[in-house]
Structures are given as C-alpha cells and as structure tokens.
Image: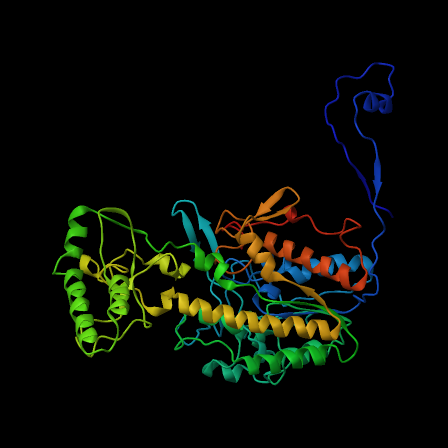
Length: 516
C-alpha cells in the first residue's frame, strides 16, 4: 500500500458556506490540496531475513547507567529490526533482563570490576527533589545463576566489550569472572562457556549485520578513568586492526551485507563536558586563608624558589620557568567561579627539591572533569574538617580529570581507529555511518529531527541519558534513522524516501522510577 501525506501550506480557514464543497473552501482560502504520494518501501538489494547486531553497550540498549527491559526494547538494532520486518526481515531476539530496575547479579551478589565498582548497577532516574540523577535503590532481580534467557540472540551487543573481546573464547565463561576476564553480560547470553561473541553471531548465518561502537570501549575506558593507565588503557592500534579485520572478514565470508559505524570523539559526550572546571564558591575568610602561608601561599612560594634554582643551574630557561610558575600558582577569590585543584603528572617533578612541591595546579577550561566527580567535589573528605574539601584542600586525582595531553591521546587513537573502520567498510562494500560527525552536530548547533532538536546537553538535550555516555531511547531512534539512511545509500532501499524512518518523538528521553 502506498503512503500518502497531505501537506497544508496554510492552516487558516476563514469560513464554510452551507452549500460549499470542502474542496471549494480549501481552494478559496489558498490551501494547497496537493497529495504527495510516497513510493512503496523496498529493501533494494539488501537481505534482512536474518539480521544480527554486533557491538557493545549502545547496541545492547544500555541507557541511564544500566541495562533493563524498556531500554533494550528501544535499542537501535531492535528499532531497525522492526523496520526491516516490513521488507522481509525476520524475528529479532534480545537477551532481555528480568526487570526494569537494571543491574545484574552473580549468585545473589553484584558483579564487581577491578576497582570494586558494580558493573551492572540499577539504573539512574532524575530525582526532582535532589535536582540530580540518582540510582534506584530497588534490588536487581536479574541473576546469571537463576534466570538466564535462552538464545540464540540476534542482538549480540555486550556492554563493556572491546574489539578483541568479541574473539575471546573465555569471555562468556563463568569461571573467568573471578579474574575479570569474562563479561557477566556475555556469561548470561553465551551459547557455551567457550563461545565467542563472533562465533555465536555467525552460528545464525546472518544475511545482514550491523557493527557499532566497536572501538568505543577500546578508548572509552581510558577516558572514563581520567587517563589513569593503572585503571584502563587504550587498545594498541595493531591489536585493534587485527581484531576488526577478523570481524569484517568473518561476517562477510558468506556474502552477508551490513552497516559499519565509526566512533565519535568521546570527549564531546556530556560525561566530560557537564562539570565546570571552576565550580567552587568561597567566602572572603576562606579565600584569604587558602591564599595564606598556612595553605597554598607556602606552595606558591616554594615553586618560585624551586624554579629559581632550576634556572640557576641551567636546567631550564627563565621563560619556561615563568610559564610553569604561572600555571602552578594556586589562588582563590571570594565568590563563585573558583577552579578546582588537580594533580597533573605532566608538570615538572619538583619533589626532589622539596617533597611538598607535588605536581598540582588549578584546572582550566581546557581540562575536562568527569561527571562522576560531581558527586564529591566541594564535600569534605573528613567530615567536619574544612581543610579536606575535595577539589580545594585535597586536589582531584588523575582519574577524575582528562588533561589536554590525555585528550590528545584519545583523539589520535579515535582518528586511527576510525581510519581502520572506514577503510574496512569501503573494501568490503559495506554501508557506513559517521557517528563522529553526528556527535559533533549534537554538541554544536544540535540535530533537528521532526519536531525536535536534540543536543548533547545532559538531562535537557534529549540525546544522551543520565549517565552522560549512553543514548536515551530517543537518541537510539535517531541513530537507527542514520543507519537506515546509510542502508538506502549503499543497497538501494528507500526507508527515508518512503517515509519509513521512525518518528523519534515516539521514543522517551527518560523513565519513571516507578517503572520496574
């Protein structure tokens, strides 16, 4: 059946006469009655009969800091599958969680990462009283020892997976959870303890596939850790190239078609752009004390002396010394807008001259404070002791800040990963989605779609969920549309021209805490 859209250029009807036909009235009032007949939907040369999606958290439908049923049902692959069903697409199964609380348990206990954090905690919701996102306190009910779903699964999105994890035959083995070499989510959905993500995907003989955010976690973990290499590191380029090449070669070995997406400059995500570098308000007395010799005044005097010594022994020039003195001098003023104090390992190590002259400075607008730091900046590390205010008396550790040098590392890695991704897509004749350009548009003027303009602003922008990294369901709908446009361009389908892109307004930007 053909889709028909009526376009009214003027909606003002002055009046109807008793004997007038409706068409006469429309013509008399200059209303365009042109009927736009849209073409029938066609798949072109694409075969959607068996669609498998590979990826990580975005593919899985992760949103608001968790995985839960409603989010999974609005994952962008599931949205795609619903549209594919109109032109020969088959069933699309997902490893649904047990509830809308989110969180994943392992024998009744949470699954912890190497730092002791719950890898699959209950989801965030926006608490109007607190004026901020908070996590549900309800207990998770999804337990990998109790209620695992039965595969195979068309959605092979595994939150937290890096490129090489999709090839690792122990990634779904419960025995490897103790050493953090297995992923609890893949443990839940793997066909066997020795299965690989790629192997379980290929076992379904996909006719069509998507690869999204492969490379994302290869750099995101490092970024989320504030560039702290003791927590996570960027995947070496050679390792990524080998893993991604194996994915493309294997997936296309049976002439499957597909779409590949690159990764965005993740430092434009609201997780890295929401917390200002200067959020500290101070009264005159506190600012005065912090500037005194009893606090940072002593540090400022110490760096002056240390750099004077280094210049005197020709270890560096006076110009270089002056530049670093200016960078490291810590001062506060009464009122709002005081910058936090941070550790910066890129500064000259002065502790050999004076053990108290640690590498610290105040943050600038070029530094990115991670969203998770917002929960404790300005609070007292030792309750009742104002000298222990985090970000003032106690500098922020490396893991809470992305320095400009670390941001450059991330950008260079993303550029290299994206070059590999696009080259592989081109060589294999696959469709390609530029999510990097999409995020830059969201972070800039915004992306207009239908009645909405989405931006990358946290909470209010509509595109990104409360965790600051993952999309809202509306954002996933936007992503699904971009995938369909790419499919149109490569395989001759006409999702866009036939009016079969989804209305992003049909998808929510948040979920109520009562949804469980």
